[in-house]
Length: 173
Image (cartoon, rainbow, N blue to C red; front, top):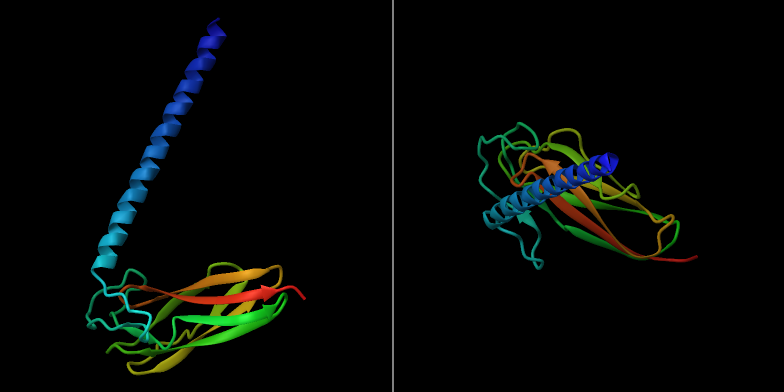
């Protein structure tokens, strides 16, 4: 009987800890959601009919991404569709951009949403008015059907992350 009480007590304690952890996680998710909503409301989102641009005033404000003066970036395209490709094909695309701010643009990171999407980006600062590209390579091996992958670019811009998208329809050979 005494062992049953101990076991029951351990189960109750474990459930309480689990419930408190879930409540903490949900609270953190809600706080993050509210911060993201406030951040999104304070920034203009470009429409899909014009080139995507983040042209905010250049200020001496530290970016959360890197401790550099803020500048702005303008991509000619934010999305690229490779169309129909065959399974196993490796395709690439160059996203062209311009530093539209008055400070050097420093890209600190660019990464794909999965291992099949590999971006390469300039490591040197892009001067104001300078142009460069982010090369994105997509390997369709092991994939079939409609594919959509994101590339997150982190730089001294506001907001610090820009998301590019590639899509394709991978067909069997």
